[in-house]
Amino acid sequence: MEVVDAVFLGIIQGLTEFLPVSSSGHLEIGKALLGDKSIPEESLMITVVLHFATALSTMLVFRKDVAEIFRGLFSFKWNEETRFSIKIILSMIPAVIVGVMFEEELETLFGGELTFVGFMLLITALLLWLADKAKHTGKPVSYKDSIVIGVAQAIAILPGISRSGATISTSVLLGNDKGKAARFSFLMVVPLILGKIAKDILSGDLANSTVEPMPLLAGFIAAFIAGYAACTWMISLVRKSKLSYFAIYCFIVGTIAISYEYFFAT
Image 1 (cartoon, helix red, strand yellow):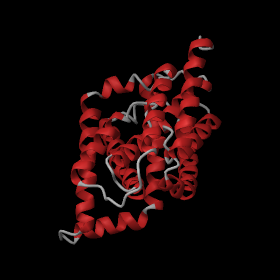
Image 2 (cartoon, rainbow, N blue to C red; image 1 turned 45 degrees about the vertical axis):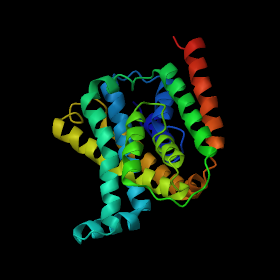
Image 3 (spheres, rainbow, N blue to C red; image 1 turned 120 degrees about the vertical axis):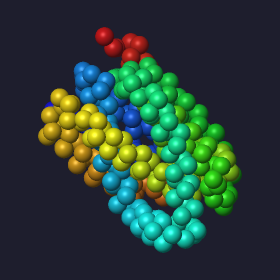
Image 4 (cartoon, one colour; image 1 turned 60 degrees about the horizontal axis):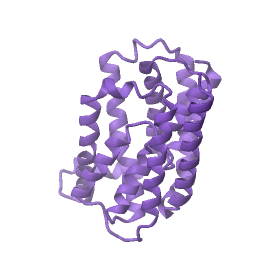
C-alpha cells in the first residue's frame, strides 16, 4: 500500500468514525476502489490501526470525561463515575465474546466484499430511520440498556454496520436521551479498540504483517487529525439526531456498493 492510499483511507476513517455511516464499510469500499489486494489479515490490520487513531482522538475530545471516570474509579466510592464505568464494562462483554469466538470468520469479511458491505449499509439505514422516529427523552442509559447496546456493538463488528449508528439507534429505541446515547456510544468503543491493539501486539500479529510502516504511520496520522476535527464538529449534530439524513446517505452508498460489485467488479 502506498502512503497516499493510506492517507486517503485514514481521512475516510477519521471522517466517518463519528458519523453513523459505518467507517469500516467505507474503508472496505475505499480499499476496493484503490484496488487493494491485501490478504484479509493485512486488510484487517490496516483497519485496526486506523481505528486506533480515532480512538485516541476520541479520548482527546472527551478528555474531561475520561479523567472524571478515572478519578471516580480510583476514589473507590460508589459514585456516578463508577456506575458509568460499570456500564461501559457491561457494554464491552458481547463484543469481546464475539471477537474471541469468531475472530477468524470476521477477518475474512474485511477483504473488499462490497456486496456484503452494501447490504449491511442498508441495514444501518433502516436502524437510523427507525431511531429518527423516536421521541426525545431525558432518560439515562441503564445497566440493562448497556448490555443491549453492547449486543448492537458486537453486531456492528461486521463491515457496513455502523457502530455509532447501531449503538446510538439501539439506545434511542430503548428510550434513552439522544445526547447521553451519543456520549455513551463514543466512549464505549475506546476500551475495545485499545484492547484489540494490545491483543495484536502480544500475539505478534502486527509484527508479522508485511505492510510497510510508513503507510501505516501516514494513515494513522491522517485518521487522528481527521477524527479529531470530525468529532469536535459533528458531535453536536449527532446529539441532535438528524439521523434520517444519514439513513438516506447509507441507503444510497449501500445501493451503489452493491451495484458496483454486480456490474463492474471483475
